[in-house]
Image (cartoon, rainbow, N blue to C red; front, side, top):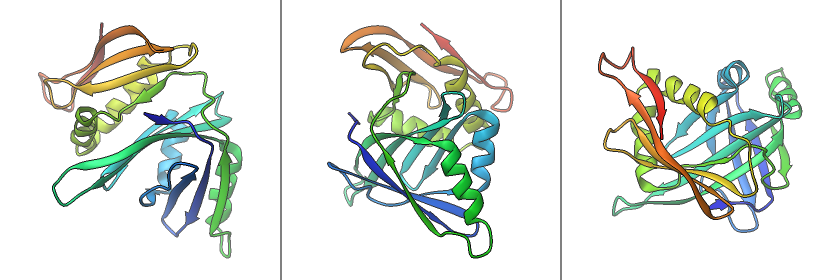
Length: 214
């Protein structure tokens, strides 16, 4: 389930990377999510960015013509019995203010920490939910292959820009292919479109491409 509680998002700057933690009424992120500074350049160029850190992963999306950034976190912890447990959380932040802090923090004697409040989920696009165990495993397979990470990021950007209607969720699940997904749309709790986000890779991963099948 996606956590819709308001959240405090805390950033810490290092020379080469930025770390993120979240605190809400229900949860405190189990660890920091770390990403390199050049990742923000990729985000601004593509509008989407899919990253992992340890067992957790996050999908960054620029929304509202780049004025806001939506981050869909899946926070996961691996236990001694090899099970993964955690939760999904979405935050929406003003991107101009975040980008300015990232720039300032790279300067000598620049600020090292910064916090921003996310008032809750307010996107006009459907929520993309990867909280199922099968989707988590597929995401890890894709992120292990850099060329596929970029192809999957573009697929999310190009294929799922559907107008949002009420509580609109697209939930992803594992498919028979290790790099592909099935998905199910729900709108206000009612089932919508079902289909697959399928990687076609008959000629190798370099020439592979994603397509949506419904």
